[in-house]
Structures are given as structure tokens and as C-alpha cells.
Image (cartoon, rainbow, N blue to C red; front, side, top):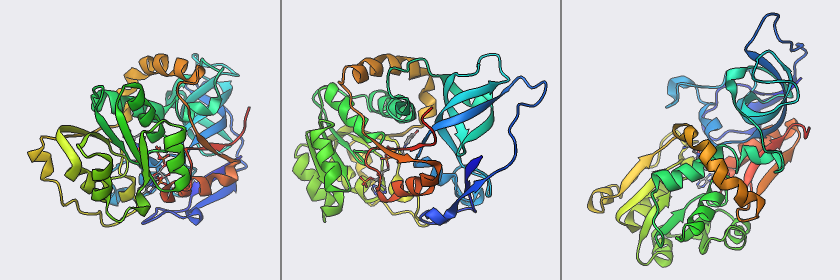
Amino acid sequence: NKQVILKDYVSGFPKESDLNIISSTITLKIPEGSNDVVLLKNLYLSCDPYMRNLMNNPKDSLSSRAFTPQSPLAGYGVSKVLESGHKDYKEGDLVYGVTNWEEYSLIPAAQIIFKIEHTDVPLSYYTGILGTPGLTAYAGFFEVGTPKKGENVFVSAASGAVGQLVGQFAKLHGCYVVGSAGTKEKVDLLKNKFGYDEAFNYKEEPDLNAALKRYFPEGIDIYFENVGGKTLDAVLLNMRIHGRIPVCGMISQYNLTQHEGITNLAHIIYKRIRIQGFIVADFHHLYPKFLEFILPHVREGKAVYVEDIAEGLEKGPAALVGIFSGQNVGKQVLVVARE
Ligand code: NDP
């Protein structure tokens, strides 16, 4: 059973060499009399920025949860049930939930989030548009952002797993939307594939405040925050009165031992800006409503989704580490097996 393990807690930027591929020879079997575990064959694993936080020593971390050194990573994935010790699942079921970064996993059935019912769409989509990133974009934009038609929306990390959807939702809602991303290829995707009205490469803008003034002469109503740091600081200068900032993530800060200072915070007061952090888990109850909304959009091609596929568990370390330097174009998926 091939596994991707964390060698030791990480400080600073993660490196491929912080992870290791090993083969475990332990035979996985459902313990006799057990009624709450399942044996899974893992198919598609999701590479997510929050996984970096779980590589920290919990002593120095905001999160009380952490990966265990010398054990496999774990995260969201699509798997097939090989053997079930739980009444709700049977052999052959496809499931989405938290599984280990290995070929086969014995996990508590409680880690399964749902059984996959719709298989006429690519299964890998459950790690992205039909899974956590999709629900994050939906709940963050509609519930936290409370958009109104015609409002001005700015999205950072705009071509990623979450960002590419926020842009499309904003357009469907009749907003003006601008995105920032880190390469020309991504900027082209924003404008030509995801329907962003405008897009720019933040790495080529010496003055982010000036860039935002160019795209938003009348200011920003909603900033969907994915990156934090200097981008947030420049955005605060350009927010409109009663603007909203759904704070989804701050990836630019995850690998810094000393976080960047924000100098423009007082704008929150003068402009009565609402900044609200959220965690997608707060909105799991909306998943059925979200699926009802998104599935027809996917089937009719009204919502598109770009994935960056890494083939084989051996590619796991590079795929995961790569999202912290923007190597991924679209949702980073790791394929362990296709069936
Ligand atoms: P992405 O697919 O967008 O991948 C991460 C991207 O972030 C990279 O491709 C890169 O794109 C960009 N990036 C990396 N480092 C920096 C940096 N220093 N400054 C600016 N941009 C950077 O990831 P997701 O869509 O999965 O996640 C986006 C954000 O949403 C993250 O902050 C994540 O933590 C958060 N999130 C929060 C959830 C919640 O429940 N609150 C749930 C899911 C995600 P580029 O080339 O454009 O720089």
C-alpha cells in the first residue's frame, strides 16, 4: 500500500522533500465484529492550501489539528468502497470524504461526507466544483458576500479551485468582476474561459493600489479574499462604503513565520466595511441546495471547471507543494486510480 507521509513538522515554505513515498506491507482488513469502518480504494485526492496549516507543529499553530509525522497525509477525496463494515455503505459505492493519502485506506465510516449519487459528471469534480471548493465559492460569495446585481467584485487567486467559480457566480449574478492571478496563462483563462470582465497579473503590478484604481474607478463592493497580505492592504484603500470582504483564505501568509502587517485597517471604520471570516464547514447544510444549483450548470456547460491533474501517488508531494508557488493552473487534483 503506497503512502505519502509527512516526514516531520514543517516551518516556512513546504518542500517536496518534507514528504516521502513509502510502501506499507500491513494488510488492511475490517476487524471482526466491527460495524463502523470501511475499506476504501482511493481514486482522486484533493490538494488544498489548508493542508499546509496541518503540517505545522500544533504548538506553534492556530489549528489544534495537525498531521502526525511519519504517517500518511489525509484530506478530501473520492474513493470506492471495497469492503464495508457499516450498514449505510456497500461494496462498489463511490464516496466523498476525508481519506488518507495512500492507495487503500481503512477509515471510520463517519469520515465519509456523502455517497456519490451523480456519476454522469467527471468523478474528479467532487474534489472541486462539486465538493468543498465549490461549496466554499457558493457560500462565501452568496451567503457571506450578499451580492447585489451590478456590484463591483474583486477576486484574488482568481483562477484557482475556488476563485474560478466565484468569478462565474459573480457574472451569473450580474456583477462586474475582476480577478488577479500570478501568470499570463492564468490571466488569459480568467478573461477567456471564466468570463471575468477584467484580469491582471499581480506579480507585474508594482503598485497594487494603482492597479485596483484602474479597474475599479468607483471602488469595490465585494472583495473575495483568498490571499491576504499586501493585496488586502491595497484593497482596503479601494473599498466602497458598506463593502463586504468574505475572508476565505490568506494563502500569502501560510508559509511566513512573521505575518505581514496591514497598514490600512482603519478604512474598515470609515467605510463601514464588513469583513467576515468563514469556514466552509459552517455551510455543509447548504450542500444539497448547492448541488441542485450547480449540477445543471455543469451539465449544460454554463459553469466550466479547469483542473490540473497530477497522475499517480508519486506526484503527490510536487502537486501539493506546488500550490504554494502557483504551479497549479486550476484545481489541483491527484489521481491515485481512475476506477
Ligand atoms: P488554489 O487552487 O487557488 O491554489 C492556490 C493559489 O494561490 C496558487 O495557484 C497561487 O495562484 C495562489 N498563491 C499562492 N501563493 C500566493 C501568494 N503568496 N500570494 C498570492 N497568491 C498566491 O487554491 P484554492 O482555490 O483551493 O484556495 C484558495 C483560498 O481559499 C486559499 O487561501 C484557501 O486556504 C482558501 N480556502 C478556504 C476555505 C474555507 O473554508 N474558508 C475552503 C477552501 C479554500 P497565483 O498563480 O495566482 O499566485
